[in-house]
Length: 340
Image (cartoon, rainbow, N blue to C red):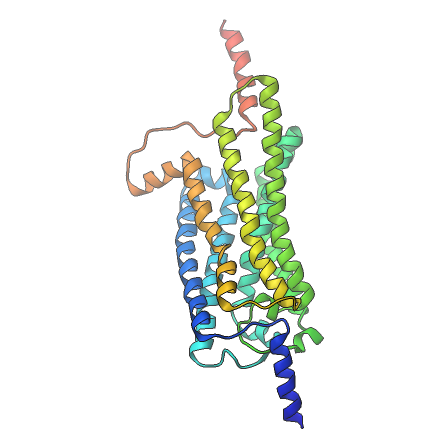
């Protein structure tokens, strides 16, 4: 009678907030994740190397450097996920039931999945705060957003990582941790409680929504200032427009896996491993796309790459921030007046 109850519980749990196992689809998922993770690791390491080998770039783009490090962690999490699930599949234990608590504390990829998506999101929120402050309160921005302040923001990223992992671990200590799932995919939704998984996926999407809105505020404010001063900032407007478009795309790329995972966790619908693999792989392309954008719009980064490769590059003046262009122009006026 006990075995009958266990069998019934296993069947019930496989139908509620769980994945399905298909050898071919799951193997495709594992190969896809390892491939995307490997490509993203190369892209992240490239930009990180360029930043850390230049003192000026480290200071000027410290938050972007931290963002690239977080994206590197995200890329590593894809590789760990593919290898971990592949091992479970090839050893024939993928369909063996496991508790949510065991998924979180005995598997090595759920933690990296959490950090790999949340840490880039928190970095994006910090960058959004800096953008809005620079436009809305330029005097406060100049006084408050010093280099030390950027270091403090950078230090808050690992602190957030520790706190969110503690929350995730605490969420499976109680009854939620006793829930038995029918497969060993050990995704975030089957390694943490329902409330934490819901918070996780809403948070990462909301962070990029904030980034999109803040960029839109910067773009709209610059448009108004341009019309009032009759200035021409076509090149900068093109860059902001591109960033605005990429932020909107990021929302779609991150919202898709969030919808899939939450609909599975809340027992709304079922998805196969192919659908899960394709949608959850989308955020992995953000690192690749962001690397392309960085090289396209940052002359200093390209110059540093040419320098490391041993090519001679034409000396270029440091790129002026769109927030300091007016200040630099105003500083030149007294000098010209004195000479005349």
